[in-house]
Image (cartoon, rainbow, N blue to C red; front, top):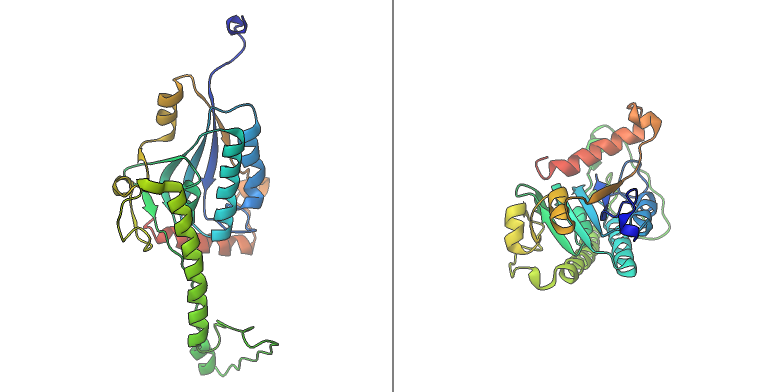
Length: 265
């Protein structure tokens, strides 16, 4: 008889988690596990959602934070037995694609940027600059490797080999994550794990995404026109809403801009 009570809403509910921005630990306005843990938990536990949709728009960033968030989503999906579907907007590259692989299915726009399954570590070298200006670098360490990759000293081949080895281990972890998530849907293409990226249309042929589609129409097609969408995302502070930021935020914005620029965005 409950179905005849007019004020009860039995429309299916889809929890939408907005994962928009660069992925980095401890930075305000960035995607990281500390900032998103609570809202991800609420998305799965509040009521009984018919599904959780991940709205992803990220050029990547920290592999550790990507792994932590993806693992949390998968753990809750299995615990609550709730299907997870990811929808790529402009880009799901590098760590952004790591997040997408937490879903059971991935959709993208035909013109989305998808992939970049690789690892990048970057720095700068200023030893010639400080030498020209008569600046002497003084470093005192305990431990022969404590000052490795010092940007104010000439590059050491042993340091380069060591950091490349670390990058290789992280890359293998990324590849394992993608292979577990996508399984036999992945095409047998040697370019998949080279760090290359593609449009959503091409990514579908490679098995990186399951189809071309957008969040609302796909979920309504699956659960009906009366489907309700409950959006979960971080709230900006009052000062940030009015554009106030400290110097650290400005530098973070420059760094994030460089991440987006890799994909022409």
